[in-house]
Image (tube, rainbow, N blue to C red; front, side, top):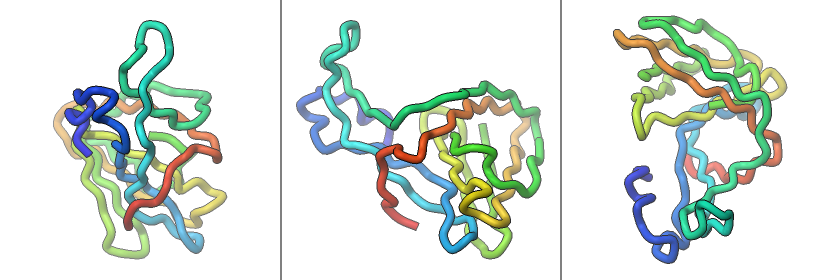
Length: 148
């Protein structure tokens, strides 16, 4: 889903969901998946009444990170369930994901040590720094795996 879709009225947004590239895990190995959050609802919070809202679960320990150009994060599992130009590869397959920064550059990494033996590799091959907002999601975040 393109974020420009969010310009729709709240009544037109009924049934709209947010699809995000995710690094998940199955059978102890990391996987590239598509997660779907939603549907959006009309906000009832003062200051945003009528705007589109999407509750993604309780979050804690958010970190703002600046990754230098051409940074290689190496092979690792996600330190917590969290979310420039990023190239993600998996150790035991050919699956990969290229995430471009900007309004469509959102990813969730959820292949924590508890669910993945080998994790994934992240590389930031761009010529500019990448800004990452790492926001751990609780295990009860409401989403469904939309595709692999």
